[in-house]
Image 1 (cartoon, rainbow, N blue to C red):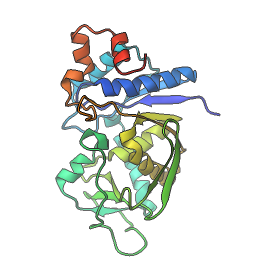
Image 2: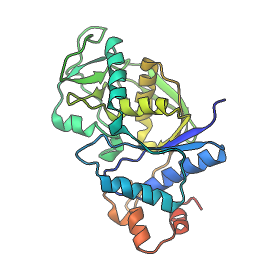
Image 3: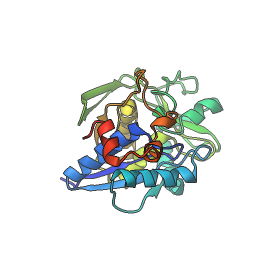
Length: 272
């Protein structure tokens, strides 16, 4: 069996909050218990929302909480040529097709679905080519979607939530992999980076279960190694709403400024 390699993958579009702390601490503990390695990936592809001060803050907050990782942090914005090569492989294999969605829809799909909503809607297929085969060939300055195998059940055994199954074309549809401005989607960048970093287990929130199904399809199409998954249950506020970056009062930075110690935060999130 390969040595355990886990990862943290925050995006610098806001301050880390208690929900991040719960998931990242779980990832840290699983790597530590396995005697493995934990890496950090800076998912900064959203140039409009990513800010240097948030990168600095997330590194400081993770270290303050007591999370340790090995090797320098990897930034996705420095890996565009790698994503482009993977995208062109999908084009050559006939797995993708051009798409002319609205700018608003494409901007939303640049990052993890949980940033704005639980999940992206099932694509209506308006740009999907007729027939059984996707369109081949590369068209410059065009958005591209991955054509999912309609009706196929994507199954995986989650280390925390058990057996999971999603049906392509029903639970999720054709999804964006490349934008005409030369940037990959969250799904493509994540799948490529997990393979490049030799990640053996991905620990992340349960709001990304469908993203796992999408990324499994990309792994298969690109010939990438399979990854184990451990999806954590989400923290919610007093109204039952999932914690998000808009909850500034629950940011780790706020907890620090209020005088809370790391042990206090860990008790709040139920890890101690």
